[in-house]
Image (cartoon, rainbow, N blue to C red; front, side):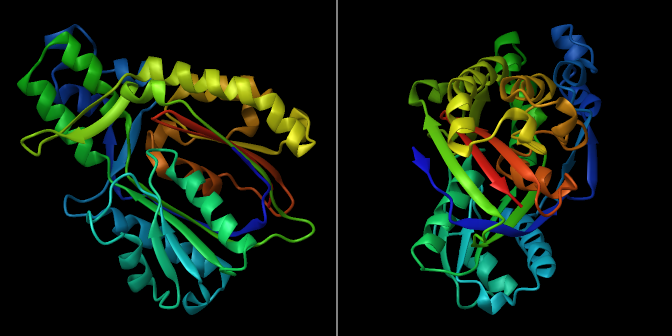
Amino acid sequence: MNMTGFSRIVAIGSYLPDIEVASEDLMDEIQSEKRFGVPNTWLTQLTGIRSRRFAIETAKPSDLAIEAGRKALEKSEIEPTDVGMVIYCGIDRDWVEPATSHRVQRELGCKNAACLDVTNACHGFTNGMSVGDAMIATGAAENVLVVTGEVPSQVAKDCIADINKNPTEENFRGKVGGLTTGDAGGAVILQRASDDSGVKAYRFASEGRFAELCYYKFDEQGKRTGQMLMEKISAAGLYMHKSLISGTYKALNWKPEDVDYLICHQAGRKPHERCAEIAEVDIAKAPVTYEDYGNLTSASIPVTLDLAGSKEGDRILILGTGSGLSISQIGLVL
């Protein structure tokens, strides 16, 4: 699916909790060396993820989204009452019903905004941006707040408990990917594009045949369960990006050297480096967040955008990826 962009990013916000958790500490919790012959440095060596942030036990996904949304509003100088739509894009939600975006709307004072949730695993945020873009294109909203809040630390703790209960090699390999994630919130505010700035193209692709490589669900007893086959899902996502990239540059009328910043979904060092190779962009132009914050799931794109230090006029190429498997390639000018 391809879309022409009609919106621009006028503000970015992110939120990272204060609690820092080292990869070695998580590996010690599952006694990786004693049980599986894997040193506690293995996860860091494999993925490049040294640490991540965990929210407090009682944190809701919306709590992190609200903090990020508040920062984006402050940067934009837009009044909350001028926001026409709030789109929440997290994997987890506060409730099954209603949409979590309603709590975000209420807490941020966006009382005139329509609300809805968009969810698509780690890929949800770029999908949410495209929905917001479409609303701006049709005149349904002038200002759209796209937010996400993720607390995968809860999943990581479940993975640790499951590995400790069933310490087999197979269970370890299927669950250890859950220890790569970190908690975060991210947000952007979209307005109609100007002559000089805006999203130039959205390109999306999905391959349902890869759906079983990474999932989490609830079993018949209501217990959260899942797996993340890191190497396989990474290889599949990179294959999809490689097949799409030449068409993306053609749609943008860009060359790789035109890109000022490459913003990737970051699951670890190897897929990050491979994305830069596929895009033919110098790795120095691809800001790193995975080392200190881990895989931020759907918050990866907005947090990296916020921390990148980009400025007005910069050309940005976004490579989004999420289980399912879905990818996106987005070109925009700030």
